[in-house]
Each structure stands twice: as structure tokens, then as C-alpha cells.
Amino acid sequence: MKRAIFQRFAFIIALAIILSCGIFGVAISNIILVRSEESMLYTVRVADHGLDYSGDLKEQVDLLRNVRGNESTRFTIIDMDGEVIADSDVEDSSTMENHLDREEVKEALKSGIGYSIRKSETLNISMLYVAALSESGDFILRIAVPFSGMEQYIGILVPAILASISITLVVSLVLANRFSRSVTRPLLEIADEMQKLKDENPEFHFDLYQYEEMNVIADTTLQMSKAVKESMDRIEFEKLIRQEFFSNASHELKTPLTSIRGYIELLQNNMATDENMKKEFLSRIKLEADNMTNLINDILMISRLETKEAEVVMSEVRISPLLQEVCRTLEPLAQKCQVSIRTNCKPLSMSANMQQIRELFSNLITNAVKYNKPGGKVEITVTSEAKEMVIMVADTGVGIAEEDIPRIFERFYRVDKGRSKRVGGTGLGLSIVKHIVNYYDGSIKVESKLGEGSKFTIHLPLKRDSSK
Image 1 (cartoon, helix red, strand yellow):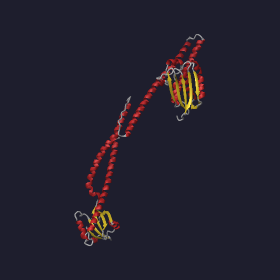
Image 2 (cartoon, rainbow, N blue to C red):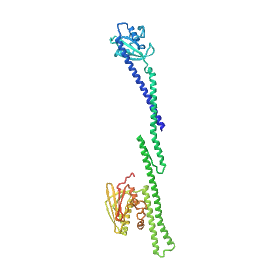
Image 3 (spheres, helix red, strand yellow):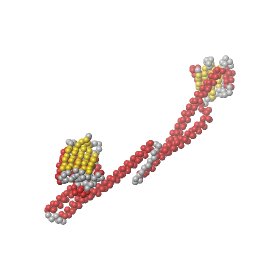
Image 4 (spheres, rainbow, N blue to C red):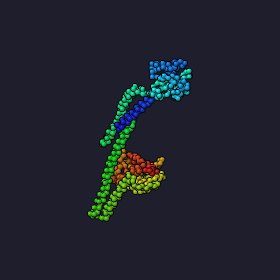
């Protein structure tokens, strides 16, 4: 890249120098022509004032030519009809052609002054002609000098031009080299820093570069590395969560299986001495099987919510009737725990899957009842704000320690393991609640104090974005 930048930069500079020299040459040539024309016109005017048109004009033009410095200058006097009266280069002017068709003569007759450049037929060299009407008005005085434009100054200009081109080119190449280095060096440094991505905990250090675009690349690299690190940390965290989940799920499934197997072995070994004991063993086997079924169903529901791959049937769910149905289902549990349930539900409906909203209410209220105190209360309030449904479930139960609140939505996480075993459950209730809330792009907030109770506040959009 450095070589390519240098070559292109050098090419542009060389092209600019060549064009500049060409333009300079044209400009100098024009300046030389104008200065020559002005000088010759001045000479014509001076000669016009010094000539005696009533005397011997041939002798006078010869004298003008013999003046020091005018040796190469040709003087010609022409009458108004184009006939040559006298010429410094020709002894007998009568032998010369009529000059009325000469460009400089035609312009002089028309405007008083005429110029032209052409090859002289007499001398066979390129000449510059300047003609002007004499003040007497009866003659045209013409002067001619050899003129080759810049060619006569080549010997002087070429060395100077070559020297200036050489100096300019050397300076330009040095600048091109520095410029290419200033562009490629930051890129190489950024590339070297990027190699640190192979390290376990890379730390990047970028200088403040003179080109803002390089600083943008450096900042973008830092942001990308930060995003990659966060992504890797998230993957590692999810890996640990997944491992913990499988471990907990295996443990939770193993426990009821162990109990079922134990009761079956007791029955097989005729340890149940009467029918009542057999019925009790069978009842416990059924209870443990139900627990396993509930656990598997909860695990499957979390999996479906996480992947969002399962086909979910949406409908308009009327919240108040659904909430009353869930509360009626939990009434036996509330009576057993000596807890009262009160509801205050605004008549609302939302676009959702009925089973998911039922699970959300059921898990929240079940937890509020189970982790309450005898004589405690559970209050469920459903209102609306803007385009959202707001669900508040408050209880007067045992509460949650502040350090445990960030983890209560983790799968199988139990705040009080002893109490959790006594009240039962799969340990996935609040995790399911969190997944359902995320599924509908909602939010959940927890407020709790030990010994005073807890309050869960959920915001769910009444209309789910169909593009998600």
C-alpha cells in the first residue's frame, strides 16, 4: 500500500510539474512576443519621427539599419498602394512585389498598426513584422526582425527549468515518501494491535493520529474488541448457566425418580402390609410422577420461550376473566397456607397467547401464596399506562434479601432452600415469568424487604409488534 501511494503521489506531482512547465513555456512565449512587438512599435515610431520623407528614403533606411544594435533589423517603407519605396535589405526596391496583401500591411491600413509572424521569402527565415502608418499618412513604415519565439532563449531557460524541476521533484518525492509513511504507519500499528485479539485478555493502546479517519478506525477497533469480549463473556456465562441448568435439572429429575423407585421396591418386596399402606405408596408415586411432569413441562416452556421457534397462537386475551380463573384454581392452596387473595383488575384485553399469560399469573401468585405467612395477604392489581398493561403482585410474606434479588429469575435458584423444599415446586416459576415478559418485550421490577413482603411490577405492551 505504501508503494502504491508513493507511486501515485509521485505520478501526480510529475504530471503537475510537466503541465506547469508547458503552461510556463506558453506564457513566456506570449510575453516575449508582446514585449518584442511593443519594442519594435516603439522603434517604428522613433524612426517615423526621424525620417525625411521628401529626401532619399533608401539612404535613410540604410542608416537606420547601420545603427548599433539594429544590424539584424529590416526596415521597409511602403506607399498606400502597397508598392515598396525603400527596403534596407534590397538595393532596388522596384524589383520587389506589391505588399498590399501582407497581413501586417492590411492591418496597418485598417487600424494604423499591424503585426504578423511568417517566413520571409527573401531571407528564408521566420520573421516578426510590425507595420504602422506614418504621421504624414502617406506611407507605411514596417520593421522586421528574426523571431523564433522561445527557441532563442532555450539555452538560458532550459538549465533553469531543469534545475527547478529537479529540485521540485526531489522535494516532492521526499514529501510523497513522508505522506505514504504517515498513512501506512497508523494502519500497520492498528494491525499489530489487532493481533492481540489472539490473547486471552487483550489490552489495546492506540496513539492519537494526525488523520481523523485513522482515529475513527482505531476507535472502531476498540469498540469491536470490546463487543467481542462482551460477547465471549456472555457466551461463557451462558455456558456456565447451561451447565448449572443441566446439573440442577438432573438433580431435580433424579430425586422423584429415586422416590418412585424406592416405593416400587417396597411394593415388590411386599413391605406394604395392608391395603391402606399400598394406597399411600401409590399416591406418593403418583405425586412424584406429577412433579416430574410439571418439571419437564416447565423446562420445555422455557426452551420454547428462549428459542422462539415454536408456533405460538395469538389471540385477544381478556385479562380479568383469566385472572379470576387462575385465582379460583389457587384458592385451595391459599386456604391451606391461610392466605387471602384480593384482585383489582381493570377490564383490559391484549394480543397474546392465553396459556403464556395464564402461566405468568399462576407462577407469580403461587409464589406470593407459598412464601407468605399465616394470615398474610396477596394483592393483584392490573391497570394500564399509555399502551401498556401494568401488573402488580404484592404480598406480605417473608421477603427477599437484597443480595438475592438479582438472581431470583435464574433457573432452579432458591433463596431459602429449606423452605423451598417444604413448599415444593420446580424452581422454575420466576424464570418462566421472566422469559414470558422478555418474549413480549416487556419489563419486570422487584421490590422486597425481609420480613415485610415483596412486590412484582410488570409492564407488557397491549399490542405486540408483529415484525418480531
